[in-house]
Image (cartoon, rainbow, N blue to C red; front, side, top):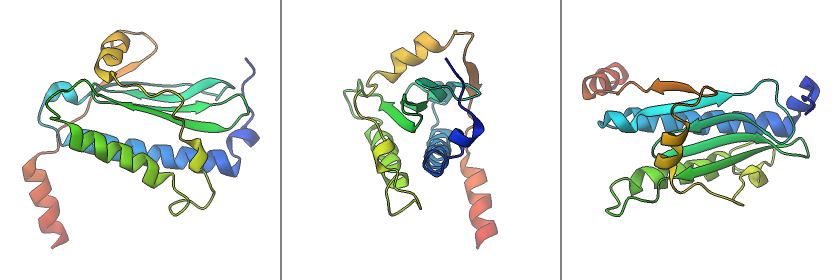
Length: 163
């Protein structure tokens, strides 16, 4: 596969999609860092450089969420996502709803200077993130990380600093 040159990676559309993806990823990791259960703050991720046609550029997997920046065949970036649906008691439905709304909010024409609304791909959506996470957890292609928990004391300190 032929790597993309930097001119293609820096096209306004791709730059806007990458920026939105990074914002979604930041919001997602911030949301995860607030969870008390340590096993839900574990992540695996990989970044592939340089971007190559029909390959992932960045992939993030967690027991609750899946997020991928992908370079399509037409050299345009796309965002694929998923969220854990196997939780019968809806314990995490508020987090998965925030995650999904964030994706569409941050890629909407009202939020970006370039129209990238078509970058969100729903031809397939991962609905069993915990199984995918377990499968990829020991892969040599992925980096493993535990997100630090944002404690209530830290939140109070930030609130005092703002006040």
